[in-house]
Length: 402
Ligand code: OVV
Image 1 (cartoon, rainbow, N blue to C red):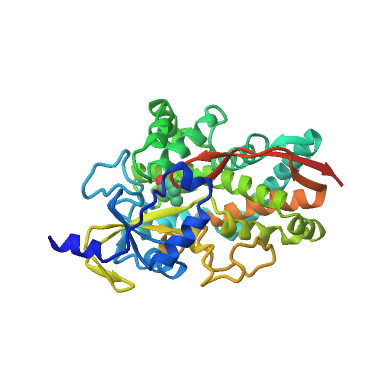
Image 2: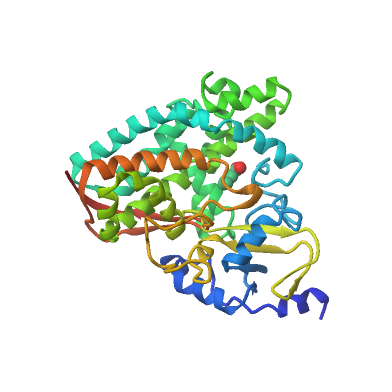
C-alpha cells in the first residue's frame, strides 16, 4: 500500500454521490451526515476529498497558499488533464496573477459604479414586478428569475442585444463542468460550439459599448495593467459567473418567500429588509453549492493527512446549514445576522460581483415587497439539475397586487 492510499484510508468514506440527481433532490440530510462523519471525507468514486463543515469550508476557501485554484476549481485537476476551455485568469488562478486581474474586475464594481447603476436597475425591477403582478400566475423561473439578470447585467456590461440567449446555456456549461463528466455535463455541451462562438466573439473590445463595465476592463489595457487577450478573458469571466448565479438566486429566493409566509409577511411590512432577506436566501438556498481546490503541499485537515496535488470539494451550501455555526440553521429568517455565510464564497476568491448581485436582489425584492400582497406556490416546482448549481427548472407562483 503506498502512502497516498493510507492517507486516503484514514478519512471516512463518502459513500453517496453528491453529483447524482437523488442527492440534488434534497441534499440537506446528506450534508448533515457528511458534517457528522468527520471534518474531511474521501470519495472513492471521484477520488477527491470533501469538506462540509463551516469551519473547514472556511479554511479551505481562505488558505489559498495550501488550497490552490490554479489547477481548476472543479473536480478536474488541470495538473493532470487539459481543461475544456482556457482557464479563467481570475477564478482559476492564484496570486500574483489573481491579484492583478481581480483588482481590475473590482474596479468595475465600486460603490460609485453601483450608485450609477442603481436607478436603471430599480426601474427595470419595477417593470419586472409589474409584469408578473399583471400575469397573476406565472413561472418564476422563465417569467421572473431568467428575465431580469439577463437584461440588466448585459446592459451594464455593454453587450449587444442580439444573441443574449446564449448566456444561460454558457453558464450551464461552465457550472456543470466544475463537476464530473456525467450526463448533466454531456447534455449541457450539446450546442457547445455555437454557444462558445457567440461568447468569445462578444468578449472582444469591438463588440462592447464604450460606456459599460466591459469598456472599463478594456481601459485597463490602455493603462498597461492587462493585455488585450486578458481583457477579453475578464469579460468572459463576467459572462460565465454573472448570469446563472443571479438567475438561480432569484428563483431560490422566490421559492423561499412562497414557502415561508411569515417571512414574506415581514418583508411586505418592511421592504427595507429586502437586502438582508436576499442575503439570507444566499445562505439558506444559495445557488452555488461547491467549489474545489487542489493542495499545493502535504497538509492536514482535522487530523487527516492529505498529500499534495489532491482535489478537495468545499461544500459551501453545507457550511450554510451547519448547526455548529448557525442558530436554527434550517430556518429561513430574513432578519438573521447572516454575515459569514458561504453563499458568495470567502477569501481572495469570494464573489467579486457581489455588489452587483446584491443591487439586483435588493432592487427586485424591495419592489416585490412594495407592490405584492400575497405570494404562493401555484403548483409543484421541478428541479433543474446542474453539478454545482442549486436551481429550479420551473417554479409556478401566484401573486396578488396590494
Ligand atoms: C465565479 C465564477 C464562476 C464561473 C466562472 C468564472 C467565475 C470565471 O471566471 O470564468
